Each structure stands twice: as C-alpha cells, then as structure tokens.
Image 1 (spheres, rainbow, N blue to C red):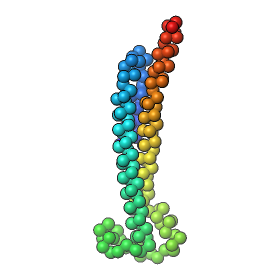
Image 2 (cartoon, rainbow, N blue to C red; image 1 turned 45 degrees about the vertical axis):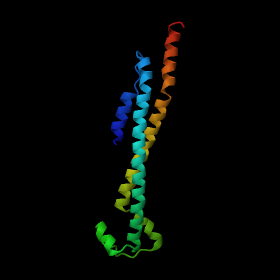
Image 3 (cartoon, rainbow, N blue to C red; image 1 turned 180 degrees about the vertical axis):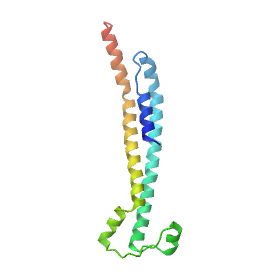
Length: 144
C-alpha cells in the first residue's frame, strides 16, 4: 500500500459534484466500502509488522546478550557478537540496530497509513451531512 497513491485516490473520490448531489449520495456506500477495506487491510499488515518487530527485537536481545546459539546464528546469517557489553548498555545497541530501525520505520508507516484511512472512513461516513447541507442551501437560494 502506497500512502501517496491512496491520498490521490481520496482527492478524486471525495470531490463532490454539486450538480449531481443525488449521484454523490448514492456513491457513499461504495466509497465507504472501498476505504474501509483498505483500512482493514492496512490494519492487518500493521499487526503483522508489529509482531515481526517483537520477534526480531527478542532475537536481537538474545544476540546482544550472547544467549543466541551458533545454530540460530547460522540460520539467520548473523556473525557472532563477540563484544561483551553491560546489561544497561544493551538498549543502546538495540536502538541503533539497523534491522530494528528498518522494521520500526515500517511499523510507523503503517500506523500513519491506518490513521489516514481511519480519518477518511470517518469523513465518508458523515459525508451525507455535507450533501444534505448543499441541498438545503440550493433550496434556500431557490426560495424554498
């Protein structure tokens, strides 16, 4: 999922044609379904990324504390960590670990994507109010 592509889709889909308010009103269920499905897909990806981060974080902790055995190291393709570090310094090594940083950036990206899609779904949910207000305004201008 690409956030910029989704933003462009939202810009196109959320434009209200004031000359066809009846059609705009009828499009609401499809729009809601479209963005709700995107939101749910993003939430599932986010959950997977968060779990992947937790597993990697545990593996990196075992790696930096020297508790990871040779077999697991070989399976992961990591070199043994020969440096002895103090327990309170492990967090510094983990915070600076490139693999953890990369995965944390992915988690952050999907959190922002979910937040954007959630806001979009809420906007579409209450879009009928804007359409009703536009209809009322046209009636007012027409003298009704």
